[in-house]
Image (cartoon, rainbow, N blue to C red):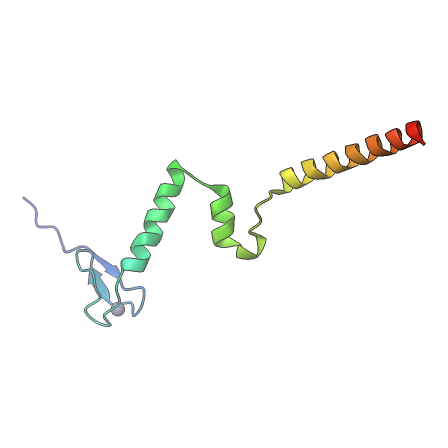
Length: 93
Ligand SMILES: [Zn+2]
């Protein structure tokens, strides 16, 4: 069996080489827990990508229960209602 070198990655905090098996950076004590959950989010996104959830995460200022499509639908409904209402008003008054 060939000897494989220890697998390391650069610590996102201090840049020191950290063993992938190590949970915490030996140099600065940085924990990779946050990055791990972020990676899970990225890979899981391929299977069940929730666009609304993504927008809410990435653009909190655009987080809106109504999408632009449903807003357009609501606008069309309002216009139709207004037309019908004015038509009824001309019939009865
Ligand atoms: Zn570090």
